[in-house]
Amino acid sequence: MQKDDNFNEWYNDIVEKAALSDKRYPIKGMNVWTPYGWKIMRYVDTYIRQELDATGHDEVCFPLLIPETEFKKEKDHIKGFDSEVYWVTHAGTNELDVRLVVRPTSETAMYPMFSLWVRSHNDLPLKVYQIVNTFRYETKQTRPFIRVREIHFFESHTCHASEEDAQAQVEEDFVILKNVMEKLCIPYFLLVRTDWDKFPGAHYTVGLDTVMPNGKALQIGSIHHYRTNFSVPYNITYEDADGEHKNVHQTTYGMSERLIGAIIGVHGDDKGLVLPPAVAPFQAVIIPILSKDNRNAVMLEAEKTKMILEARGMRVKIDDRDERPGSKFYDWEIKGVPLRLEIGGKDIANKVVTFVRRDNGEKGSVSTDCLADGVQMILDRIASEMRSKAWGKQLDAVLDITSLDSIPDRILRFGWCGSEKCGHTLEDEHELKLLGTPYIDEKFDGKCIVCGKKTKKPAYAARSM
Image (cartoon, rainbow, N blue to C red):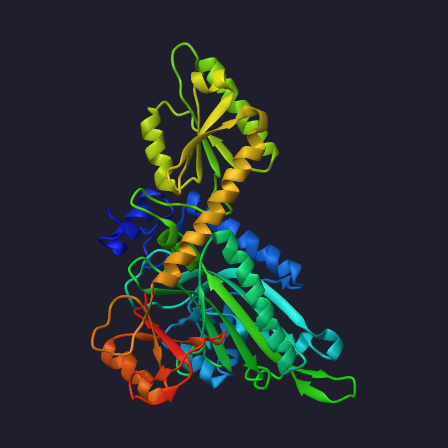
């Protein structure tokens, strides 16, 4: 299957062949995490936890079910999710007095508790996060990791004494994002969503968008500044140093298993997955090249190599299956293992290990005298070059346009006056999603692509996944 010929078919084919997920569970859009895919997700979760723990966030775990009475307290929020939520209406055969929402996100579950936890300025900032499953009734065609109904989800929630403190948290979130995305080698744009597309109840939303090979945008996460939009209806207040009671200012930051979809789409090729070393279940696979005369010596060298690399903290597997080497090469290429190490009689005689990089096919050898250092250096170079290549493709995908006469499948950059009327014209008449305006100002001098009004601010749009 050629990636550039039909990305959607290629994507589904790779997910199945690499055994990342099984969609045969009898509820559409609720897929089974298979061992290999779940290992990748767990490494992503690990890096998220490391970043959040290092910045003073505490991990929590809130219940799955939310009373309708709490869910309804923020009117814009429930309006935004009304068509997407699952409802629990019965306990056994008894109809519930208050319906329960199956968690679509956790604002309305957490904030009644925040109103109990926050009492004074000494309780602030409150910074918590959880990694849980959320549920949304997705009506479009489902696709593993990208569009599902049960979503593996990370969300952080914070409370602050002032709008400025909350804004500082948003800036910290961008640093956390940068550090995690460097591990995944995933590029992204920070785009402030339009008022009609921001998170329900937010003051503003910054979408995190990456570009897929078909030129479409994939939102991999979002960061929200709420001001007091939730703390007022949920009565989250604190007593300041002067004894005055004030509402807290809040933020949230969320990403999901779409990160796995981004890894597949951004890095994969016609042979299969190409995994960044940081999240690969196996960073190197050792393939013994055996003959009748050297079997024992080669296997001993393979075990020794594995032991040396694991002592350095690398994740390594010896493929000792009774299969031809070519068949093993094919299997591990599909699974995207960053580095293949081959050990045969000639390698032992020359005191080297042969390596083949998955990302670009480069072949060479590493001396056994500096094996751990040599392999680590190659893995670091793989990550660096994957990151650079992905960012290059992301930036090359952006096309500046001044007319809507022809709309290619690209990330489009153009002038927009900021009016909702022109924005809806762009979306409704040209089947585009207006992704928003850059969070970090970009130099621009042009005209609104719809009405012709002069503007100093560009906007981005694309067809979305």
